Length: 341
Image (cartoon, rainbow, N blue to C red; front, side):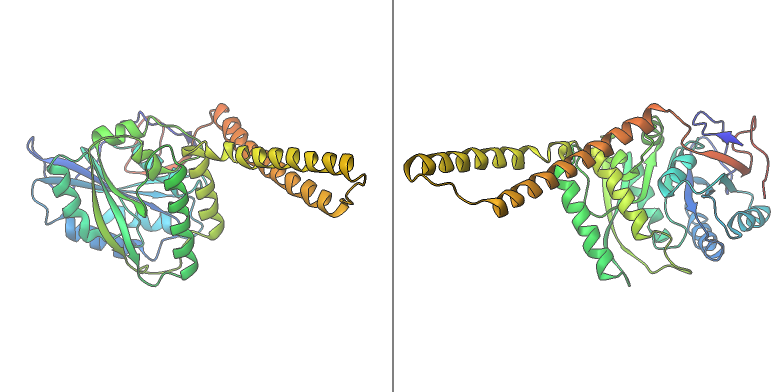
């Protein structure tokens, strides 16, 4: 088992002969229990890449601790497709970390990241490359709509991007996807960011290099069901907000000021009434409302502070972001096996 090594000497084997005038590109796709989707994905991507002039290419699949035959299928396909490479993570580290593992093993001129379930249409690859050749260092796909998506996911997605757009210290384009092209300059900068809690599309937005956008319609999955549960989406949203905004830490300032002003005014009113009229206002109900309301705000504030402290704690441990269980294609010849079942 090996830790994350982002100074690897990964040398891709291209699907076409190269010369000094050609650009090289890697197609990077994380996989989690995608044994049924992989053959269709490879067929679609290869068909598109084979028609591109002056481009040498390779495909890197990252198995994110799958419990099915995903890794075995990658190995079987690699025997027939010499340009195919694979990384196997020791367990399920998550989609964002799987992307990071792939980025750590790149040496090509650019990388295109997309999902292997074909919801990210490979047909856009030529357009990505066209904008890259025109000078863009980053080309990102922006989802316009998703076929057969549930209303709940659509509403929560809009709510998340609306919130983070208002509070983030880094402008994040609504509905931008991890489906993107990164020039060598961009992905080299990106892999210097070793945050434990990763939100790749936000990290890309923070790079600041010349960027272009492509609209797309997310297609239905080619097979199986989505592996992104509500719990995983909520966790990613939580990490995104706490990683790219300090606004939640100031959440209690304005309610606290308002409560303090209200308390002083109400206390002044009670004192004046006692001095003028001579009676005290019965206030057990109002007192309980005030105590419970302020107590709720205090607990919420403590929870937010705890979230940030937890992030700091995880970061200070400086643990590797992932561990490799095996490789196909020997991305790191010093410490990886050729293939691990």
